[in-house]
Image (cartoon, rainbow, N blue to C red; front, side):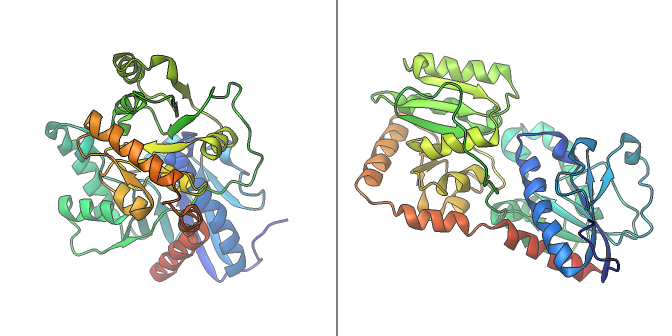
Amino acid sequence: MNIFADQFIINMIVVDCERMKYPNTGLFAFCDNLSRCLVDLSSRERVDMEFFVPSNIEGRWGNGVKYRTVHDIYKLWLPCTSDVKVWHTTQNTSPYCPPARVKRVLTMHDLNFLYELPLSKHARYMRKFQDSIDRADTIVAISRSTKRDIEENLNLSGKSIEVIYNGLNFFDGEIVPPQVKPDGKFIFTVGTILRKKNFHVLPRILKGNDYRLVIAGNISSNSYCAEILEQARKWGVESRVTITGPVSEPVKQWYLQNCDAFVFPSIAEGFGLPVIEAMRYGKPIFLSDHTSLPEIGGDKAFYFDHFFDPDAMRARFEEGMKIYADGGVDADAMRAYAESFSWENTSRLYMDIYKELL
């Protein structure tokens, strides 16, 4: 049965979920959770919505939902847009552009290239990001940190930026252990294995204790994996470091539920959703103090030295674990904080923006 009423009060809003072609990524999770909640909300409020998706995603949020399949030719021309009133581009840049008469919402996740790449490579990204800003009617940043980066580096031409936080990833399925469980106490982190995640600084905190380190995520760079393991060898802890590669959501939840601590030393994050996911389980959290992470972690996390000095990192880890063991961290307050990041609230704020543009 079609979930939409026969007659809509508000006509067509399209959400661009093209980046769901990349599974096990933050953009996939963003589009999946936001769209799931928008489907429910649009049904209740009789809003005509359509989701622009790769072919394998059709049907994901129900067979009665309207889907528009992505085709490469649409980069040159988007057909059947005469009834489209609002188009939501859910990533920093997109080759899929509706006609100029269509109001456009742009979600900016980060300007991480400012922190990852040499200055000589910034100009190319600045042009692409500026083009996205120029085409947008409403701009949304996923954190105050991202908003600040946009304001300081791009020309907004008088446009304002709304900040809408991401929600906590929805998971109500069965938690499944990995085929090989860690043998003993372990520290966990998750994210695409690339340099900005800064995972290579983590093996040093294993020196002088018996913890293991599990790093899960898509492997974007084999050379960076080799660098992480080289650091493990340098500190004499190679046998206690595991890089799993990508894991399913049920397995990731097992790691989050059963780890002794969650660590996330990234130097460039627009939001840092894994931090909130770990807080949901009331775990001690150790973060870098770069970009958005202090904003999202707040006073619920411990922070590593800005320059990742090995001795300072070990001292901070030992201190934080002791504070946690002695009851100095309110795990219930941490869980409540994590659950305040709701996709239902996030979708409500986006829906309000759509309606303002109609």
